[in-house]
Length: 419
Length: 158
Image (cartoon, rainbow over all chains, first blue to last red; front, side, top):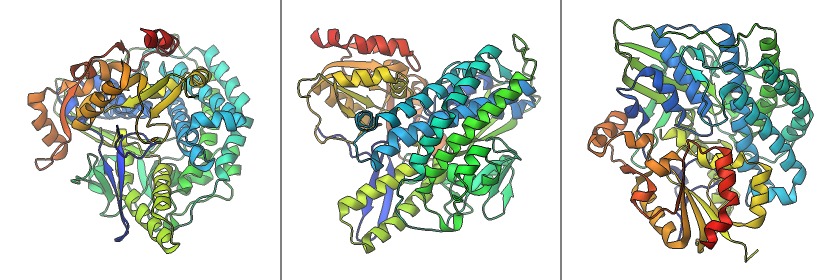
């Protein structure tokens, strides 16, 4: 029995199709259509965060919180400060959880010449130990705040069902302090791996505010342009292709990049101290884009969000956290209203938009994931790299291998892209 | 190495949360991996060509495409025991909320009228092949997975 020729060690099912003579590369996404946007129609809006979390097991917290923001935007609910800080803390945990999976379990085997991360355990026990300690921390953080790492249980529209006990936050704080030195070693592994050299002009987009905390009210571009998330449909177009169950995104008709590489490129001056120090000579540039640099950008972000989590916990410990959250009642709408939520998910800007009726039910839904936005660039990068590899007279096998590494460097979440 | 029982993990159409939950077992998963040969696991290792006979096949996800259904049938032929983990494999879960008769309308809503979907239906694994064990949960709790892994010798000897 032969298995389909999927690109392995990525999230979801895609087949790389290369036309060597014409120097063309296509990423054929074959994941089945789950039709989440259609599933949402007629559902109570308050159920959307539960449902949409299940779009992705790697970034469920990102979908869950973006969904909550979309509903709150429509209903004009302003969450309190504790809720705001707890959500930021969850997002920090989400990025650590997701980047760690990608860096250690999916990327590192390529560079240490072993078939899988399980094989890393025998040959590189120290690195494995580091990875498991970071995994333990991110799982614990997401459990303390969100109820569990995969598909959160404590979050609702308006806030939380349950607040973490301060004692648990103190424990987390100590656990972060314990892993910070180890994490520095972990980041260094990825800063020193060799990336194939090729360059292409791209554009980077990221949501931002004054902090590097994954929230914001403005999407800014490396070109200097900017727009409000609520106008995302005027800016980002999704195209249906006959060879893919995922749509392909473009910004003003051109490929662009979102994710760690875009964030680091534009906001490296806002990194927390240890991360900033480690990134002092690493400033990706959209005009000379190399997708492999996303691996380093994720490693730096892992450090940044460990520091960020610690800062947020300090703030929470200085706040009066009641034993139980005050229940928030959801207001009734007088007419159909759109609500739009956007956050920086681990792989880039994630948009959820729902039109909600006076009965509280969803009338229309649209979700645009980071990987959809990156797909057009993945193919453009694959073709740019293929040209260089052909000039170097690499064999077809090597070309396939290198292009698969390139796709992996993007950390595509195909599961998300076909939601 | 050759005499170790063979386990394989397959994902159909899903969020991959169930297989990630295995990584949540951390050191325990490593200990487990010492005693078994992992014959296939697309998320974490490359293909090794033809799939050999398997002792226990773990399947997660909803059967949505013909490729999903075909994979399930082939795995059943090769595996002594088939285990469906998580709500998607067990019940079809959220994708199955769209009934077959509403599917064309739902596809057109998401992709437009001209699009030809890969999706044929949204079904649980047991609607395609015989399933020997089901583990509930979205995703299954770590203790459920751990007990299951500890119980694999009994499953193989059944």
